[in-house]
Length: 628
Image 1 (cartoon, one colour):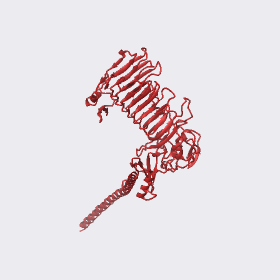
Image 2: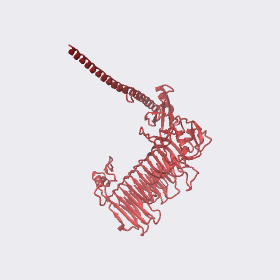
Image 3: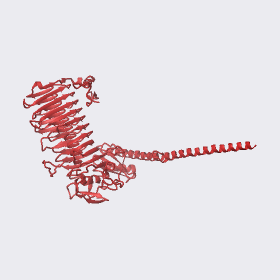
Image 4: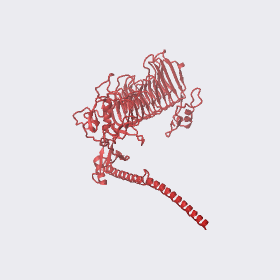
């Protein structure tokens, strides 16, 4: 009997143990589930978070619908189909109620603020509505050493100085020059010691528009004083930035040696500075070379240290010296920048840089004008006026002036210039009066050594007046002294732009090669042109060796043209020094897969494969071969 009772007790205890274990496991599972549920409810991607996002997306969709309706109605009420600020505001008031929105004409577009959501949108002149943007409040405008939320910044790569508003940009410019006003705790402080920001990092944290009050924390403030050269205009900040001399370039009177980045590391967004206005066209503070100060968003940098990258800029820039959209002169590297600004300058002018910088992955769409030059090696280019190495760049703007102009580079005076993987779509026009000027689709004038490869020109090349030459790729190539080496190498490139000239030699690839040198070399390989001008030579317009004592080498191989002859006029050239293997093709021949295969079959002497640094070819949509 006792044995049975003991067995029964053991069984009950065992069952209790199992029950307790089940209970513990159940509690653990419930806790896990509760954790998951809490995360699912409160997490960033939880139910509450998603509900908030859905609400915001619905608000934005509704605001954009309101904008589209108001824009269509405003355009419909205008007999020319244009948008007027007053009419747009009236239609917005009908859609939302009076006082709920504010529309402002900011030049090439409109800006509309929804006051309740604190969001704004841009509308271009064609009525296209941009994406929603938050109105940014900076609690420390005019002080780049303090973040928007009050954190201390030291300019290190981990804690870079921050540009949130126009006040910050103005203070930054004043700090570099060591003159003017910055703000500390909201109070104006005059500075007298320049800061070149060597080894420091500065980041742009928002889109800024010089014509938009939303880009200022207070567009009516006057505590920065006179910036635009007119002390009697009230000195309100927006007026200072958009009239007179406008924004003072960063590094106008002192060198900027830091790192400036326009890309948000978290969102990967590249910010734009819009409607910038810089006008130093009548600058009287001439440097030791007899020209005005260098201007652009940045004035003068340093060839060893200055790095500017990931930036877009639009507006108008005028200078009396070296002038560029991003920087006037000198930088170590300008990378991944786009210029939409129209630029007028003197001596060395470029859509990205005026003079001397390494440039990669940049685009220019602004129109570039050069008004004169102080030295013989001045020039204007879609990317750089007079420069070193340019890679992966495109020009879409028109380039014009009265001295040397080029679609990518105006003038080369470097002994090691390289232009790689660049293309020009803009029209390049020179109205010159000097035989030291030239016009080219890629490079206007070469004075030393340059290697050009993987390039193309599709713009019209127009040379009017007395010029050294007009060319689809290079206008002219001439040395600088009787003991200099002149080397022009053009590889894997093409021209389909029309080359038009008056009183100058012209060629589909090179307009003129030669003179004023000890060694005169030109090499053209795997290139082709369908240039329409055949008065001179389709590949090279003229070769002028100047003297029988000049060492001459001409090598044209695996290259093709459509009409006339390969090389035009030649002066004092020994035929033994010329290798001309250019072949004439019809335009229909060139627009074939067979021709593409022919280009891709090129092999350098002694090599078994296509050059690894040359881009391969494919048949383009318009029938011509283009790069893969």
